[in-house]
Length: 523
Image (cartoon, rainbow, N blue to C red):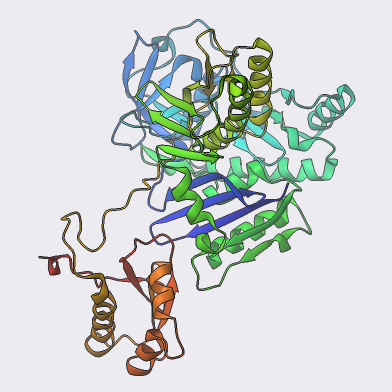
């Protein structure tokens, strides 16, 4: 399997697509002005205690107070609070964690009122981003994730991923980390560390310890609430979690992001930084790799996947519901069971893909086509479990119930990916009345004339739907060439699959959009 990463950097947001054998399997979108992300560490203040929930609401600067449950304080919360008080009381000489005495762990069955008071300052980390009307979910058990290990201050243990099956390798890694880690730091050894040399693990451990030391000194100077440590950019964070030897290419259309990704790859996989390539073509990067078309076909309420079979995906406040339909497949009685298992097996592949793609979390209920044979139901359960092996989110799958339903729970740490595939008419703006389409190119020429003659813009590109681009570029003396000769020789017409049929966008030489739309021209 060939894995590729495609990064589309736009002024307002960054979109990251993961392709497996050219098929879109993951899509992440992050607004460039959004500051909350899983892994960010804040100095917050206790706003309200909720004894009934055994939790507290913490002010971290978000419009909704963040939620911190007693069980998310971490066993060494007292040690962290002692360290924080020392930090805030002696601003000139901050304490060193490796020389700090670790206090006894807090009571597992304790009460939130025993350890927190209103107005108290606490160090917290975002565990879940704000979802719907809820504020962020917090934890006080701070951690710094790397490619091979996770560093946790205020403890002194070494844990090895259970996915590493070899007892010899587990013992080697535990002994190795125990010998190089500093005092009062716990380390979780990740699955990707299997077989790695001591030099690689030692280098990453020192990098994470330095990250802790560089950021913790910000606390005495910080105002409450404020951010202390900002997690790695989404592009690099995603790459950190999914990077593996099967990656063939990473394409980025922005120079700064390209440099940061290349630097990170050279750090975690020396000698492989050449797989990172800067994309400079005029065609939008997602169009070039066929991602735009896949997004439009995969994010609707109905998803067609094989021989007319399709899924219907519905979202409710409590759960997600997926209905499997055979479409126009054969429905004769003698072929019913064969058709059912065939359609259901194919649906399992698509459902596993959709869960990753939309990042669906919580409870997912799947209504497969009814099967009479228990062996087929077991076969489908085993196949679904296998199809979700590559899903990095924690999940649990239950066998098909007597009602023919499969229940899946999947970890949710950020809002689900929701892409609206329907388009508001760009020419009538929802009124149902538009100019004759035959006059569309005349309208475009008017916009071009206005840009060149009135606004004195000489270098710009025109993005239009691929059908329109094909029309203006056809023939020996196409319209696009006529416009170049008449107005500006640097004009370029770019087909853009993300646009509606009669939609258009102008961009200057620096790729900034030029607003030439006039909604009021439609009467």
